[in-house]
Length: 308
Image (cartoon, rainbow, N blue to C red):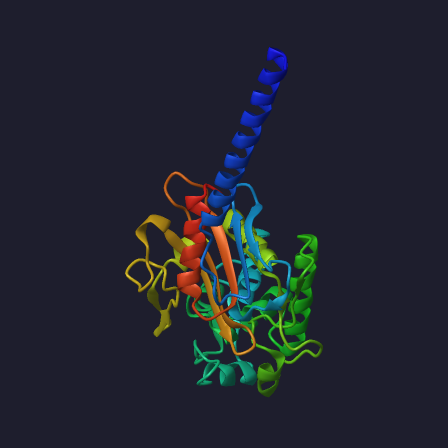
């Protein structure tokens, strides 16, 4: 055999050995890559706020009940109305509707009690964001739609769906301003018919939150308040990733955003934070049983892999 032929065979053999070894190393690295621990969440999404890109998704295109995460859309539209000059934080919102007063006293769905016939937009906004008050959210929605009765609640829900279409959210449909299911709203006079629950995918929910924190970033100041008193009532924030809470991790700098729970929706959570030297992220877990641990795992996964 000629020397040139032997050299060619040696080079081919070396190339094959290198390729095989490199291939095994790549497979091993892939196999050892540590993903987020999401044992319970049926859907999950992580989104880089700066780029607007979804950087992680688990069943992110599947619409599911979202419980009180709904309030982010409701409160966003409140902010839009104020930004458009159609109201102020000090505008008065009528809260005299008997159904809403009854709802505030409910041991299951209550929160902020309507002991007066009106409150300011700011008071109800804080009650909806921090305490997740259902009747505050409904009253604010009616105010955005121009009234204070269930007729305006239905009009507001139409506005919610219009906004979703404008944002090109393809897996989003609202039937309530608070996130309560319609069968639960019926005793209070706020069932509008149709589907029982708000159905939103985790990808779409992350985009709603992204629009919120981008256009009205002061929401992060309010959403990071752990408790406060409004009109003589204590508002308690159930976000357990905030400083001093059980699942707090200092490096993640979590400062929002919204918790949620109903039986059909399970535990839901929209988180946001910005690790030093990285972009801000929004994370969403839907129908979870361990929402704060799994959100923390998802956030660490994003940052550890330089996805934001």
